[in-house]
Amino acid sequence: MIDIDEIILISSRVEQRASQSFNLTCWKSRQPRDDTTYRLKFTDPKVCKSFLLTCCPHEILSSTRMDLGECPKVHDLALRADYEQATKTKDYYYDIDAMEHLQSFITDCDRRTESAKKRLAETQEELSAEVAAKANKVHDLAEQIGKKLARAESLGADGMVEESMKLMEEVEDLRKRKASAEQEYRNSMPASSYQQQKLRVCEVCSAYLGIHDNDRRLADHFGGKLHLGFIKIREKLDELKKTVESRREKRREERELERNARFGEIADYDVTR
Ligand SMILES: [Zn+2]
Ligand SMILES: [Zn+2]
Image 1 (cartoon, rainbow, N blue to C red):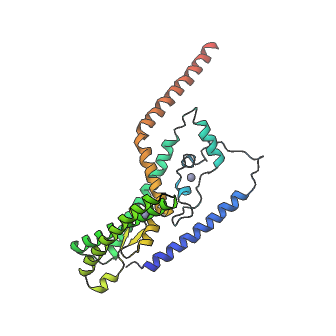
Image 2 (image 1 turned 30 degrees about the horizontal axis):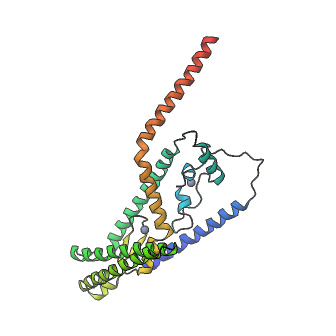
Image 3 (image 1 turned 120 degrees about the vertical axis):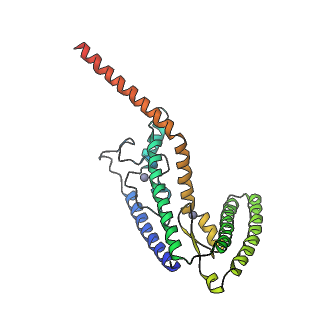
């Protein structure tokens, strides 16, 4: 049985590490830049191409519970500006590299989600199919409440009061439905079993969600930097995947043309000798 306190303890350790690495980053960025040293170009292989395309997971998930620490490649806003300027006149095909980077990151995360799910299945008391269906209904409603509440709060913060109020009405309705789903779930088992926290793994960010989590905690999860960061990464990956095949093909053709042109130059040189 996984202890919820244990998970909280682990999380707080990760958070500690994250804030330490954050401090380190702040300290580094305060160091004066030595202009006499070799200044990297954005085309240097040491530069993070995903950062140039504003989708590096190290940046998006920084100072969240899943802070990955500093990216092994260089992040530099000045280089991003150089790159953005340069792409106006030349295609660098960095979207292909970024797609490969995000794909391998998400594949790792999904593998972790799967093993977390497996671990929960092994350690949590098994529910009968009927009770599991009831528990899932509670989880699904809780998820909808959390998402809507987070959305309502962000709309409210942006001054869109009417839209926010409309969502809050929907939240009220979902709360009623959740209360009756909880009642049904509670009636299907002895009180002692009911009190045990049933965890499930968030498919988007692989965090643990509990069946007894309150609305506040759910809204903090679904509106939090970690979960939203993962949504951003996944959406970017989907977008890049759509064009990657045709982009690879185009890059291959362009490289071939360049090679032929170079070969032509050499041939010309030989003739004139
Ligand atoms: Zn990076
Ligand atoms: Zn999540």
